[in-house]
Length: 141
View 1: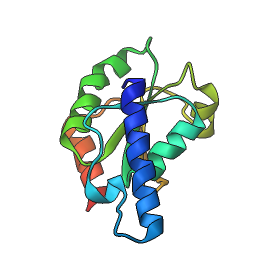
View 2: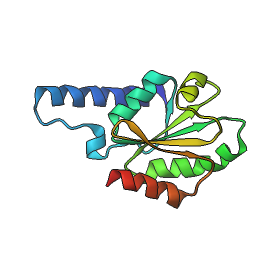
View 3: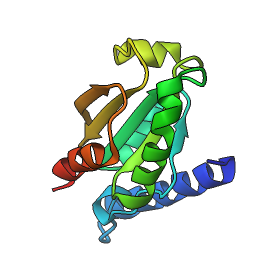
View 4: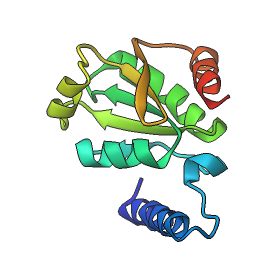
């Protein structure tokens, strides 16, 4: 995701929050199902916190470029971003070692599903599209 796209998402979120605080009927992106149809690349705890607080359900893929199973999972993760109302984020564990340690990521790929701002599920290893979509759908219901 480009810097321009991230800036646009941040701008929309800021406008929604301001509208909600004014009490003029604003809703959050997660409430309206406006999760991006592309994966969000997250660098650092602040970006992860912002993403998790912006959307009701977020699937976070902790991966590494050198990881074969991560590369196998990548098309599935991208397909989930396109076809679900959940936001899908990716965290490179080599660039975000402290973040990976905080969430006790000991192997890659590790997927953490956040619902309502809190971790709801953690999955280690490659899973199929249907399994992951079912997990996301159970949190969206």
